[in-house]
Image 1 (cartoon, rainbow, N blue to C red):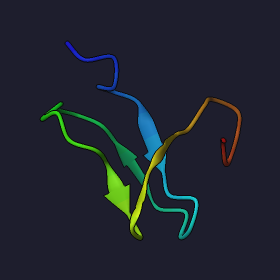
Image 2 (spheres, rainbow, N blue to C red):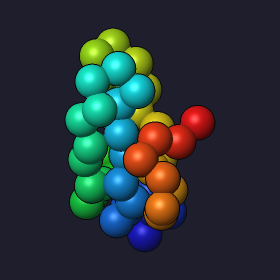
Image 3 (cartoon, one colour):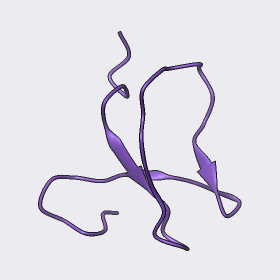
Length: 46
């Protein structure tokens, strides 16, 4: 299983969040940029 599965990702531009459920090998893109992993306890993460 991929280490990306069950992680929450967010968009730095619009704040959209997604939970990664299945790894198809592609990048997670929103607003034209790759989404970032959201760490526990933080609203936004670098």
